[in-house]
Length: 135
Image 1: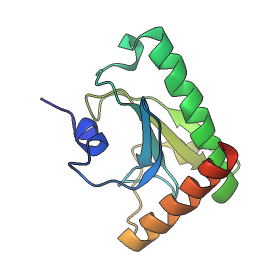
Image 2 (image 1 turned 120 degrees about the horizontal axis):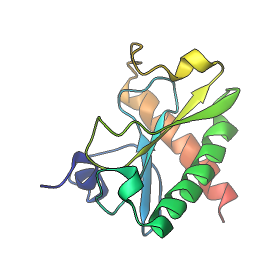
Image 3 (image 1 turned 180 degrees about the horizontal axis):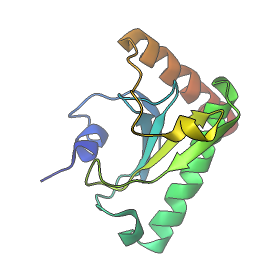
Image 4 (image 1 turned 90 degrees about the vertical axis):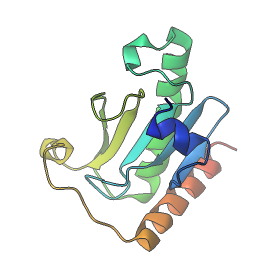
């Protein structure tokens, strides 16, 4: 059965897309820790990140780096925190979270509740920054 992320990639479930290549997809987390919290996934459906083929893993991290730079360009923060938890969805993914302190990356904290218009605006701003830096 396809994961929820595979359904997002196929357009069966809507997302706030940030960037996409032939092999990778980035979109806003709908339960963000911080404005701009983004998920980066390989399109290949593999549950555990360390089961990815080495080339796919390296490509994922390279794509995540480019997406992180775009987030950083438009969301005020000290850094972009990176987390790989791997228990929430059975599809390898990387969390990119704008942070100012270590505790900002605490996944047990209450998540933000943003309006769809806010999510769309954030996604568009990050997507534009991504396009500017990758063209």
